[in-house]
Image (tube, rainbow, N blue to C red; front, side, top):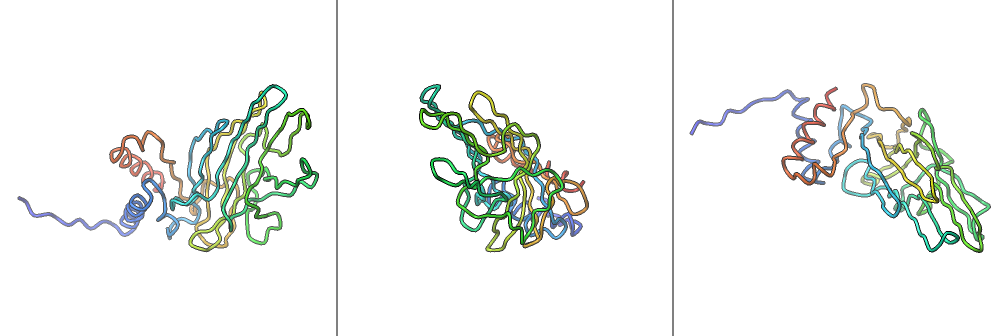
Length: 247
């Protein structure tokens, strides 16, 4: 048997490999170690996730295995005159979504509505538009014998708009965004999540839609196909992201 030869890799490559190995072992296909990356301050993940009626997507912005926000799509059909549909974001205490309170309410209630942001908007500390209830409504409608056709929220038929997000990593506040396109038809909603990002430096703001620059690391979201293929699929995902991170 030939003796093993030790290969010394450049420090930058070694750090990248160490980060990906740690992330994979800690959260399967997560990106936990990227939060500690010294070379990238914004971590942007490309994805193509469809959220159809009566499904939801658990958004883990930094890949530490903890759900930061849930994009929830609900639809209830009893009859053509009794149905309900909504897109909303439940989230844990300490996190927040940029938005505003709808004081007119529905059945005497007030709702926290998530803002529809364009690219280039600052999501940062000391923003008075950040509120922290347990759920933010993107859009909802109700068609019942007592309410008639009713709707609230502005996330209906929008293309490449952004949620402004605030969340915790090991007790520290970080800022991020999620980019979605929505379609509203036949009293139902469909959403497509095409990307999300977060700032690795605690308490530092982030600009919606910023996906290029020396301070941005771009990753491809792990697909269900990678998960189904097990170790070989995970290796392919790692290779893809190592290439993307180096560009």
